[in-house]
Length: 296
Ligand SMILES: C[C@H](Nc1nc(-c2c[nH]c3ncc(Cl)cc23)ncc1F)C(=O)NCC(F)(F)F
Image (cartoon, rainbow, N blue to C red; front, side):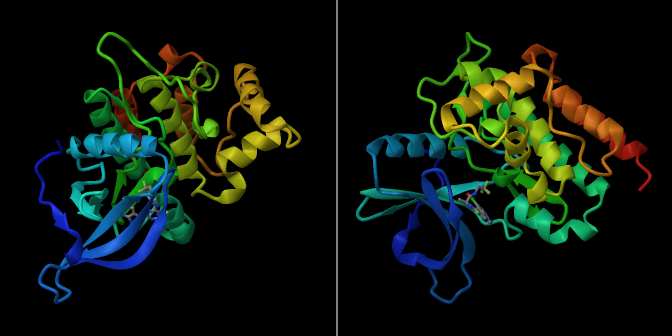
């Protein structure tokens, strides 16, 4: 059973607008308005697309995961809403008005300075430290899955791929690899479907790259990797080709005007062997130091 949060009654849910499509659900902006006078709170409601029942199992795991997380840097779970007489259920979350990090950075790159980017990186890092303390691996850490709560606060969201590391192991091995965001994946995730806190650290390095390129689409990780691989490959060998160029030492280039010590931190996250990568707590310390040393 889920954390005992209030149940949301469908009859008081007022649909306002679509927010986006996830890997197997869509999220809508709604107002929960039991008084019917438009004073109710705005919420984000994630509905499951009614198809394969396996999605329902994954969806229930996602709900269980997010309902167990209590951290300032992780999107808040509000509860669930049953509809069609408990036949289908929706996940109710807090609504973050500034939307996804990608749209926010593209729109506001003029007045978001490097100190602010480092603050966002520090907050994501702290959210990941918390996730790790709960033995979760996110497995889909990317700017598209970071939400902006305010000009000075970002939160990690979308726990659809999140898995718990078994107590006797250091990693989680996926058996049925699905449509995978391989351009955010560590080498061992690409070739052996192994996921760990250290593979999340690799993805965090890619998120730092996205932050410091302001999610400029011409510098998007997928675009640059495909350029390097050469666009002629068909899908099965793209991931093997990507694993090869990573093994040969190719990495995403330094974002324009990015301080060397910030790019060095990204490269530390992209150490080929997982045990050579830093921990989230050491990364957080380094980011804090750079923020303090930084004279903007
Ligand atoms: C499918 C949904 N897509 C989007 N959501 C929002 C959004 C704004 N404000 C929001 N407040 C709470 C939530 Cl859960 C989403 C939004 N904006 C643009 C989107 F494309 C989503 O969940 N994306 C994953 C993540 F949440 F991590 F960004």
